[in-house]
Structure formats: C-alpha cells, structure tokens
Amino acid sequence: MSELFPRDRTEVAPGAVHLPDWLGAAGQRELLDRCRAWARPPAGLREVSTPGGGRMSVRQFGLGWHWFPYGYARTAVDGDGAPVKPMPQELVDLARRTATAALGEDFSEAPYDIALINFYDADARMGMHRDQDEKSLAPVVSLSLGDTCVFRFGNTESRAKPYTDVELRSGDAFVFGGPARLAFHGVPKVHAGTGPPELGLSGRVNLTLRVSGMV
Image (cartoon, rainbow, N blue to C red; front, side, top):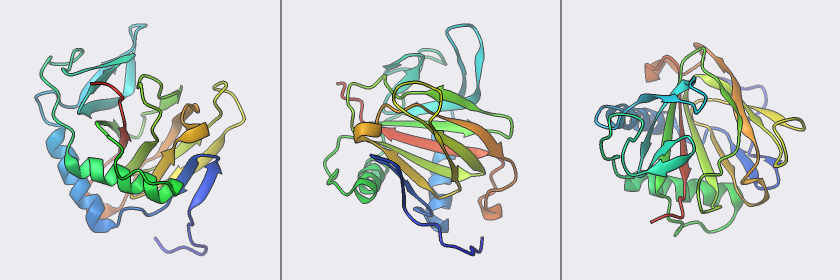
C-alpha cells in the first residue's frame, strides 16, 4: 500500500509502542505458514469457552503454555487434553528483538516462553481485558498478520476511557511493558478483506508473545 505520509514508530503511551511494517512480506508469509502448521491438532486451534458459558468469537491456541480462562497449563485442558506444543526458538528470538527495538532496552535474554495465537474472522472481536495471568511483567509483544484491525489501547485503571485506537496492519508489531504492561486493551473491529492478497489469508492472525514467570 502506498502512503502519502510514512507510518512511523509511535509511542502510544509510556511503555507502549507501535512498530509499523515490522515484518516484511517474506517474513509475514513464513510466519503465517508456521502458524498454520502449529494450529493443527493435537492441542491446535480451538474455540474458547468463558466462565459464564459463552464462547469467545476469537479462536486460539498456545505454544509453550496453554491459556484458558484464567490460567495456564501444559496441556490443552479445555480442548483435546494433549500436551501443548513447545515454544519455538524463532519466536523467542523474534520477541526479544521486537521488544528491544520498541522499548530501547536490552531484552536479549528475556525468557519468552508463551505464544498465544488468535484467529479473527470478519465478525470476531476481543473485549477490553488485561494480560494479568502471567507471573512476569516482561513486555508483551504483539504481531499482526492478515486483515487490518482497530486495536484499542487503554489505561491501567478501567476498561473505560481514556484509550487510543491504533490501526494494526499485516506486519505491524505492538509492544507494551513497564507502566503500560497491565493496561486494558481489545480489538473492537476487524476490516475484512484488507490483508495482503499474497498471504492468502481471509481474516487476521495475531501472535502475542509473553514471559510466563512460571516453571
């Protein structure tokens, strides 16, 4: 997509940084191919049930640790019960490199051990929430593939305003740590059909890479 104005690195809030076009076209294709392989059973892509009996519109699976409302396990306890696939070293390295570039600190030794991979179709949404089930407050690294979304980044006190809406396109990264680590955030809208045609992806894939602080 040609741009009248360049999409520059933006600090959305202290500790929260948007890195546009962080992954190039080849990197996006390679990562999507890997996600498709990881998403296959066992412990693959699943619907997530909420404690109230509903279902999240986003489908999800994990690498390294399996997330379920509201905790982590080494097996897909709310899926097929299979052991979770290991956290790939390539994602560990990508998380470290992205966090370092975004925040200007050295995260080259940060023990990233969780990848939560979400699939959004055109109707999927993610309500405002905090990533607070980890024991570590190391930065969260978010990577987007496919359709553009509205990413709503809020405050640490409540789901209400103030918040900032950020357009996340395929290849973008968003990192939040430090004073922004426990900020509420969500995805109120996915713009269907806006992803790069060469990806062959209908929908949006989001990877969030985290440090569990668990053993």
